[in-house]
Every structure is written in structure tokens, then in C-alpha cells.
Length: 276
Image 1 (cartoon, rainbow, N blue to C red):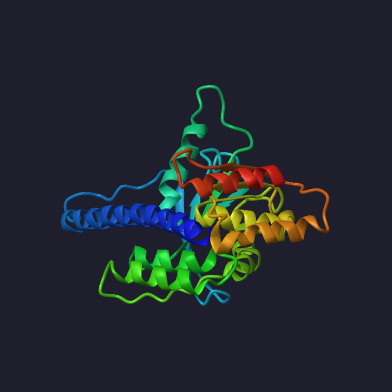
Image 2 (cartoon, one colour; image 1 turned 30 degrees about the vertical axis):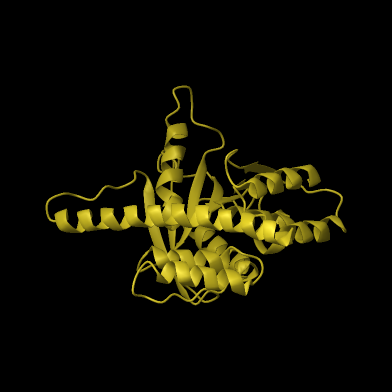
């Protein structure tokens, strides 16, 4: 059974690594094209977006926040908006921001409530930095074997050596509460209630971690293809601990997984849905 589980985990890691490498090669090739033609063409921008940076005393590094404002934001200077936070902004912000723009321009009316999107990212030298830091920040426990695997994978992409230490989810959540919330809520017209959080893969794992640790921080949660099998399914223990002292979970959760993804990922999500 242990060999079978390791095989499944290996298939899942291989699939994720393959997708990660393909995305990274695409980013690198695009960056070379942009660099070679930067003198001739203007860069592409995403409408109604801003980029803000600040130094995190908790994470001890420079953080980049990608902000997407509703089209009505400057038209209605007194309106307070709900905020939706998501992880992996270095990779996912353009996709999420443009999906939201479709709802802004609905032929019937804007989706209500309109939201301000806050993507949490890092100031990076390359996507290897992003890979190392997301593995650090979005996982609830330290798994040395996972650290070593990511070091080999990321270091194989360039001549750089990357340090990876998983298990920083508690610190990352503390950073969001004590640094991201105050920064966003003092610079933008967003409410401190009705927040949402979302993420994919490790980001989905982190969303569920927050749901069971401090569910009152957000009222809407999204977990896309959550890595529930991480560290032998430690998330099930975290859910069990919460359920031992709570009868209710006052939050809205949407989980999703691809039907052709790793079978363990699919079965784990179904198991979590039944528990909830």
C-alpha cells in the first residue's frame, strides 16, 4: 500500500512538475521576445490594474500586490467594495483579472457585488523564486523529502541554487492578517468584512488550511485542485481538530478538480466534501 501511495504521489508530482516546466519555458521564451523587441513595441497591460510593493517584516522580503479594480471604482468615489485575495499572483493574476473583466462588461449588468481583486505575489528574479517561495508559504507542515524534490527540480532549470523549506502556512497567514489586510484596507476602498480567498494546487491547500484555522477571516473560499494529499493528508487531521470543537463552519466554499487529474487528488477532494 505504501508503495502504491508513493507511486500515486509520484504521478501527481510528475504531472505538476511537467506543467510547471512548460509554463516556465513559455514565460522565459516570451521574456526573450519582449526583451529583443522592447525598443519597437509597447508592453501589453491589463486594464484597471495596479501593482504595489512593500517590504514584509514577517516574511523578510519584498512583496508585490497585483490589484484589479472594478470599472466603477473611480466613477463611484464613495462606494466600498468587497475584496478577494488570491495566491500565486506571479503566475495567475492576468488570468483572474481578465476573467473578472468579463463580468464587469456583462450585457445585462455588472455582477453584484463588484469586487477588488488582490493577488499576492513576490518580487522575483525568475519563476524559480516563485516556485520556492510558494512551496514555503502555502504548505502547513515541513516535509524534508518535498523540500529536496523541489530543490532538484528548480535548480535544474538554471545555474542558480534555490532554497526550499515547506511548512510556512501559519507564518504566511500571519503576514496576510497583519500586513496585507492593513495595507489594502488603508489604500483602497474595501471592506474588512465579506472577504474572499482563493488559490490553486498548493494555493487550494492553503485556502482549506485557512478555512479550518481561522474561518472568520473570510466568508468565501475557493480551492482549485487542492493538494489535500500533501504530507500524508495532514489536512484531514487539521479538519478533524476543528470539528472536535465546532459543530458549524460559517463559510462558503467552492472546490474543484479535473476529472482526469491524479486519482488520489480526485478521491481526496470527494472525501473532504463528504466530511464537510
